[in-house]
Each structure stands twice: as C-alpha cells, then as structure tokens.
Image 1 (cartoon, one colour):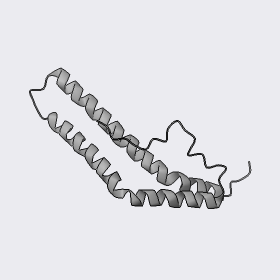
Image 2: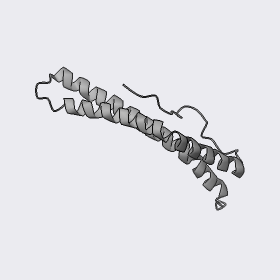
Image 3: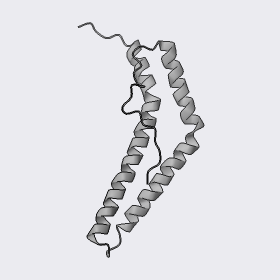
Image 4: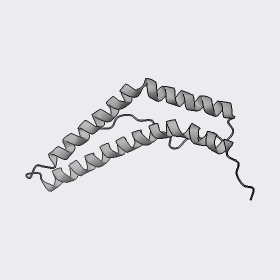
Length: 112
C-alpha cells in the first residue's frame, strides 16, 4: 500500500547545467512555492504511510503469527518504508536541486 510519490529517477529533469542563474532562482522559487502550497497534502501523504507502517509494526507484537504471516508483514513493512523513502527523497530533490545547481554555477572552481 504505497502512496504515489514524486519520482525523479530515470529522467534528466534535474540537469540544470545549461540553466542561467535567473532560471535557477526561478526554479528554486517555484519548488519552494510548490512545497509551501502543498504542505498539507504532503503531510497527509506521510501521515497515511506512517499510519500503515504503525499498524504493520503493531501486528508484529502478536505471538501467534505464523512464519508466513510474519514474513508477509516484513515484506509489507519494507514496501511501505520504501514508499516513504522514495517520497521523501523526491520532495528533497525537488527542493534542493535548483539551490545546489545555483551554488555550483556561482562557485569559482579552481582550474586544473
């Protein structure tokens, strides 16, 4: 049971190497605005996933689980945890990549 998440893997949408400083600032502002405007939906997504994870962890308290039931629970915990990880990393990338690209674009790298 996994919420849909922002997934930037497998595409080049994070390649800001050809962007101007103004474009990078605008991208950072857009990302910040998106995260701010959608904070409640983002929180709800994590809260739902956390609640599912909590219920699965509670199931593990039961001493009468069969091996198959316990293994199934572990698999579901891994799936939900992966979804949380993917979602968090996606939102982190969305917010941080334009900022990092701007810093790198402004940095004076030593010639080597």
